[in-house]
Length: 69
Image 1 (cartoon, rainbow, N blue to C red):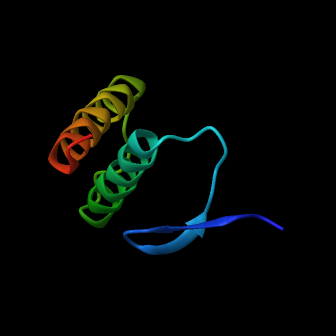
Image 2 (image 1 turned 60 degrees about the vertical axis):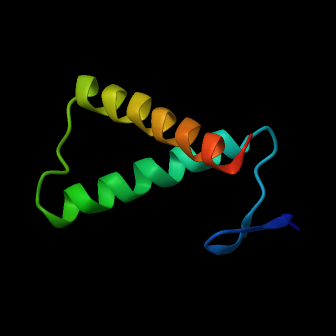
């Protein structure tokens, strides 16, 4: 049975080796892709995907800073 952990969005599967920073970045990327898909712009090239990933970690770092971590 997979372990669950409480997140800001409810209970989600716990992924071993994933940090809170990784989780925040993943949530940011997911929401970015959802917004792009809703606007019909979800067809990104490799450069754009890498930039999105880097920016997601910048956002994650800001979230951790706001938490005082």
